[in-house]
Length: 80
Image (cartoon, rainbow, N blue to C red; front, side, top):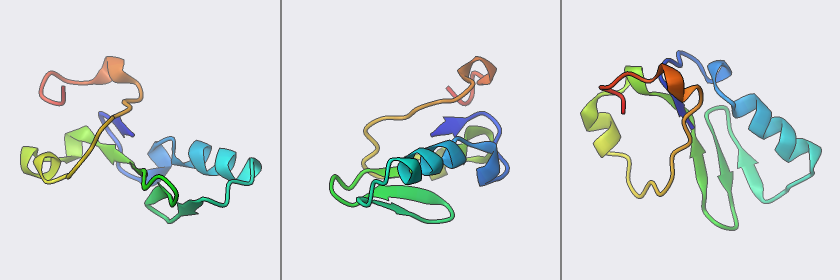
């Protein structure tokens, strides 16, 4: 889960994801302070602000299949 600016995890959809998982009693999800992992599929939800990352940081993230960008209308050309 990305967005242009995210200084803290509170700036992301983390709380929404966490709340829905808890509300629907999904024990297959492991929730930490920084990410959410589906222990069955291995899917790891990572929450980052793109403007805070370097090209090297992004390149080092291994095996990302999908990215969801919140408020994508605010993305800069560099972030895209």
